[in-house]
Image 1: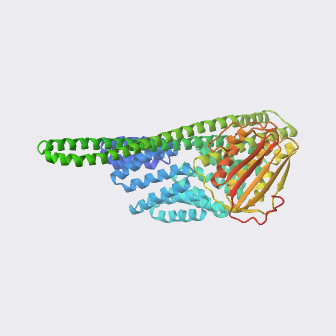
Image 2: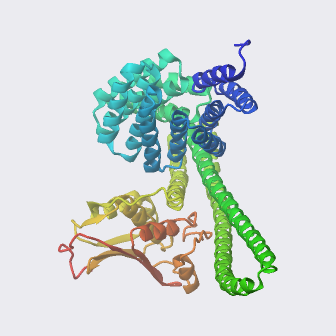
Image 3: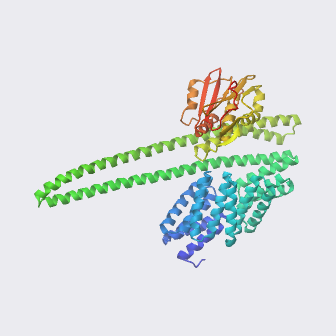
Length: 621
């Protein structure tokens, strides 16, 4: 390699970077950047595209998604300019991975399928198998298990000709995920062990760590606690050595379950605490990176729009110059033929009027485009303000409970406590953790809806089950205030709605009613159906709200207000009703609020439902 020059050296550097990018990202980046620089110098477009694709993937693996997006976009355009379809197919896999990080799994699948079709025509087995594996994995994230299995098996079949243990290891991992999701634990164990064995032979630490925690979870469900402990402890050591924080968090999570089942509560608590600490930081970083990536993509599109506008303006100027030249030429001819000039001027005048009319229309179009760009800029500014407000809420509402939990843990680990003292500390810790969990759940649900990665999937289910389950989950808060929940609903109430959305809405509205109710009061829950519209209502005897507060909550704008304390000084993030409003809107429904300060509130969710409600009791309605 030291003696290689020109395109030969570029190809060698690109190949080295490609082979190292899943094993040693820093070395892979060094070779890719040298290849990029040399390819630009000698104007080797295919080599430059491959080098940029490697840089994009290293940035993706190390969590710099915006840079990964920029390099992938450049690599894709260069591949198209150079007529390199194979290079374009590889870059499409990078783009698909970025859509996956946005949790836009369907768009990711579309990119991977395009990459597969292109790579088939180029006989590139590696890219074909990689694309099939990625399609299978994203189908598994969507819960479309049959499709995930089909594409994973197709990847294995195709890989018989390529003989890549790494790619087959990935395929077996996806198949293991499918069997685990279906509850077929013996099959899941076999495929995870097969995947792990192949990954170890290749020495690919990222794949080894990702398979280990899956296999550990499977062992736990099979009752093989010794096997689970052994493999999960290996996963912790490997993840710490290579700074694989996501895999490290999952290994701690399942180790906590191993110790819990053995009755070793201190060890279980220790691993659970490590899992929560790492996972919270990962979720926070993931949200920030995802929002930065979306903002970067938006700014990229904005720059393209401005460039197109400048091109249009330049074309208009060129047209004007051509027009002036034509006029000068006509006047020169007119000096010789005056009579022809008069006729020509008459006709020219008519053409000028038409042309001026066209110029006015073009100017109006340019003004409209400018207005649209200004509106998009204002929208981006509003998104940035919402993002800052969201982070402010997280910092304010999570710092206190998490600090309290840390103080309790420090006390428990440094002080010899009696059984009664330890039980009291556990109760206090549970309240704080419930607050953190509720805030994080609402935040993630709201963030997903705002990033348009959330889709509505209606199914038939019993709405009464959702209400009863939610009341059971909130039983601690209900007992603490001695509140009576009166439910006027049939035991069986089939509805055709999105169950996840209804669970979030019911949980937030009931939690809100409990939070602002006085001790010893009651809360009524009822439901009715009128002309295919389901009306589910909760009435409390709490502190109530002013008309201005109700108007702000129901506003069409994003309203992240500071939540006031409950009657027992319960804390909240202010996101609960915002999440309800956003999700109800996605279902073509409406949130209705009747409230009066000091007399309580009545919240009603009105959503179209396709199932007849012949089971409703008119009296209870």
